[in-house]
Image (tube, rainbow, N blue to C red):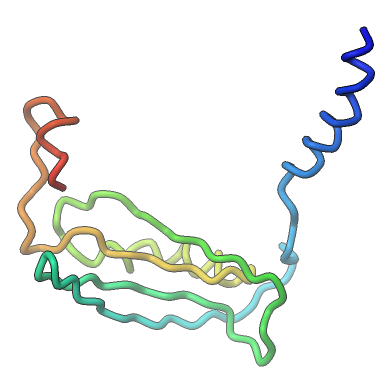
Length: 124
């Protein structure tokens, strides 16, 4: 019984600190801008296209948060990092700096669809 009394305030404080904090106004809609950049991975000898979506503002946003948008596998079509711009722009319009990365390129091998997935897809 005394453990409940001792740990109750600690548990309440812990839950309060774990609750998500709202840094940006959901009501505010910034105009957004898109910047693209292509990195080069020398170890794999390949390009890595990246899109950056950010709010257009004259002043820096306090406590601006970053969202890394990982769209998943797109069967090597390419350009998937731009296909979901309706989502990444929406996030940027709410004040987030959003990064979308192209994982696979049209020149990459397709990921295996047969065999033990945990093993055959390790190189990918």
